[in-house]
Image (cartoon, rainbow, N blue to C red):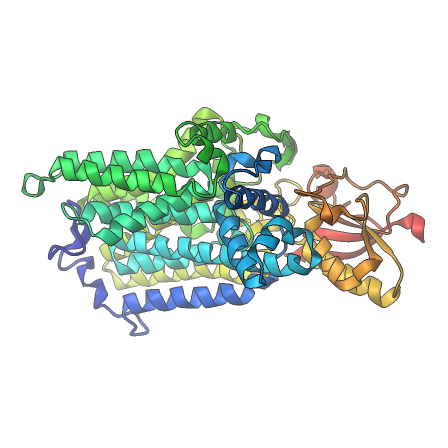
Length: 585
């Protein structure tokens, strides 16, 4: 049965000779595992706080932050300002993340009201605001990583928990996205936190701690506030609680009325908490959240093309295995090995660990992927919309590695396992260090790495690298043509380059195709360009990304072309480029 941490019994069916003694075991460095875990967690927070300012402003951030300012206006005017309804499909999203960031930044900027109603349309605030949001985003990423470790620890002890934390830190895609993905990373954090506290809630029956109930409701609220998909946690909670009650032993039969009352109060609290920064849901809390989830699952607002398996494919024509393929080619191999071990040793794991723990954690990454395949829900941009399944996936892999180590007592075999795992950990670590701050475009060796993926799969789909080109171009133009105007045509949202060029060039910088006062346009102003055409465009420089270019041309290395002044690269592969207009000499 599931055991409570405040019980004298062992957690998760641990035997005294098994993982129960992990709190007292020492690592090779003679550091107790709990202390090692929390030292890694503290180091992680310090690391991300240090490097959060290195990342670019991605495709959606300008749109998302403008959208959420409209949500705050709705709240500040007590529902009188309903301009959020005019913002494309933005009304379907809760505004939890940028509402928190906008409120905190507005308070520290000196005038919250002025910032909410006008701040994003002033050059003064742009860079500082997005640096702030990247730091908060990174803290959500840390939260997801740490709670993944804590989840694995509940299942199999501190060694598995420490492994899971290391697995998350050394997962380049998740780590890199943690800095500037303001929807998917907070969703992942809320999701794994909720799973952790659900298991804690069941372990502590029949008298769960008040703190557990509060944190569980809060976690559900965070997930719903990040994405409508967070609503899936409510049926999870009902299902897991029902299974737990039905399978409880006679010796620990749980009174049903208190369990039902607790489940209902937590579910209602989490649900309502997730709607606080969501005007559309507040207008009809019963039906609108479900309508939003249905519309977003069948996303019809953008029928663009994505690069997959060497072809440009519209989002409604992607093959059923799109998500599975992306996960396979972009997670480190220690996850692959962990899943293989998990399947091969599942029966052995069932004898050691309460089967309900294994089923719960496995269900929370298998069910969403299965549901997407069956429902043919719209996906794009690799598997970022499903990043929330990665923490339980990593936890399962860590538990499997830990179990294999525990079962295998042979010193030679353990030495081989340690060597294999060490090599698998060093591979993504080395890649992350070399290619910072572009960690999120990692591909494993199944594609031949980034080089093999180039021209076959999307690389920098969110334009993180455009910052590097913008900063270089600002310095280049200021040094070679001081005081002269520079008309710059840049891919992605203009805000991926505008703040950096404006900082370097001031009034000498003009974004091509935008009105002079575009920054004052509300809620936001955005032009989508086709791929650049020589030499008829009236711009001086173009900052280009590979998205939407002919994949065959990419594979032939025909991009970005002869007029290239500068490229931002990862592993020798160009991510974006500064091109000079040949008609301008």
